[in-house]
Image 1 (cartoon, rainbow, N blue to C red):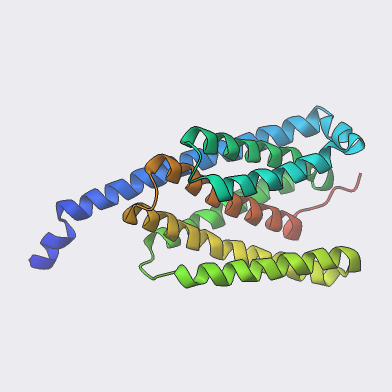
Image 2 (cartoon, rainbow, N blue to C red):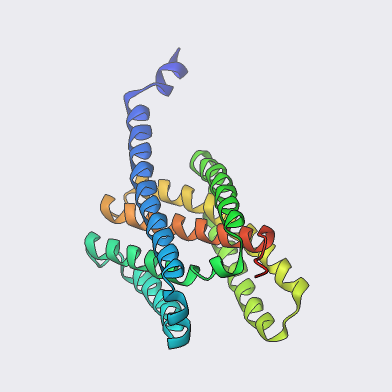
Length: 232
């Protein structure tokens, strides 16, 4: 009877409620970020603005701006107000949409939709695992980060070498890395909330950005691995 009473204690119920409330607000912001990306990508492509960006050098500018925004967010989100970090998050989501508009040129729309659905399914399963695992995943953060860095360096080298099989292998490796990051980040967000490392408003946006990046990278790798390329 003692074990049953502890499992259903007010403290346990309150903790579960707080965690679910946290994740609900994190996922809501993540969804809005993905929606902003989808709208920006669709508008940039179907309006013809993509071609103007490419010819005028705006596409390169957007890629650089993406990098700047994510770095500013990463190093300054604790110092900035919740409004500023939210603005940075959506600025990044919109810039990502502009650069991602090129996938409409490279891949058939049906493949993009299927890749999104597949990514959402995989992401949901991994997020559930991350939320419910009781293991300490702290050490895996360093391993994943180092592996990702090595993968990115090799990817840059392969741009000059142009070895096709290596590119496919890297896509699989980076996909696996971001699948790992999804589990790790879900676990980390929950623990940050439990231990009070930052206030709630900052945590909502921070969590949304982390999971947004995981989802976007899973999606793009699945698309490049399994998507049907346009032939026209």
